[in-house]
Length: 423
Ligand code: S3P
Image (tube, rainbow, N blue to C red; front, side):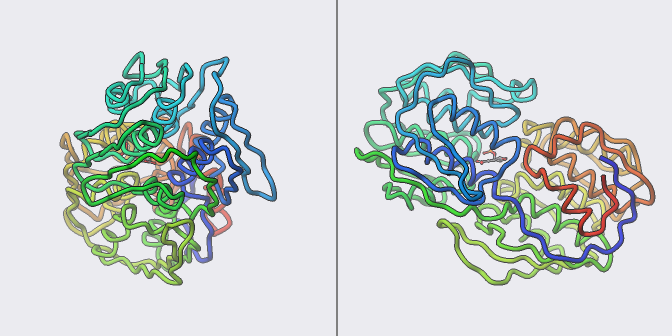
């Protein structure tokens, strides 16, 4: 991908692709129901293609009708080849949870990048529930069935672990309680409640009572992805005279840490036309250019904006004062090391910073220079560096940038339609 800066003001209206986390959950819940589910605005990108392909191997019927996905599942069949989760940790972790409840054997594999991601955080509690899982990293073989409930205290606040265990707990005998060191995204809880499953939740735990009836059909219109919206929000803030309206974006409070932080930094962001879609709050977001001040991020806010750190770090370089990020060591085990690798790329653009194990400090504003950069196989890193390129004077090239297709295949088209010089 090539980006030529400085970008002229970005003005216009955008509708974002469906939310990645909600799409994964909708597909899996539909795949466990023998009834026909209708899913609208499911994200169609690399990560969800991996999920759809794996589910088809498991005998789940998935068809397209008028742009929606029609899904019929129920009991899964033994796949006759390894299930390839591609580069998607959500696909692998959530599938592990769902497969743990099915009396079949399946091998799960994925890219080299995925093979480096930790799976033990899901495998260990699933083993405790009765599943047999061969390894704590992909490739791994899972044999499910005959699960019993669990009380689990994970060390990190991870929605993927919680979602995977809820999928297993749904198919277990007896109640399960999953504790959380801090609140993480609650899309699974919302969706399961819509399906009539009994759940008790508070900030630090969720208790689920499996039903003896089969799971009901999922009917959902997936909100726009607020993590993809973050790239447009950042570009409007950073590029002088810009103003963007983003339609029907998911604003679930467990995901909107980035909006709260940017507002605190002085960004001009309004939330309008609040509504609801599939048990999730949605709204239009209107954002205009402003000069922003630095901030400090730590604790629960980190989890509420965990996927937005690559783009937040670019914003931090343009904020006046000292930005500090702490308690964010989880960033090191995402699609790339989103502390060292990201700061390393920004260094090539001239950015100065100090790095710690769990975060960094950046003093801004700093001038960014055009450069040749690497995506490190990380979709959010590629898109964040593209936004950084828009505020330079010259041409920035991002290698291996096709990885943006993992979560936001319309990224280049969306920005070029708004007037950015990007190809
Ligand atoms: C996700 C949870 C987060 C996030 C990932 C999607 C989910 O991961 O980074 O992109 O859909 O539950 P963790 O739960 O591992 O923090």
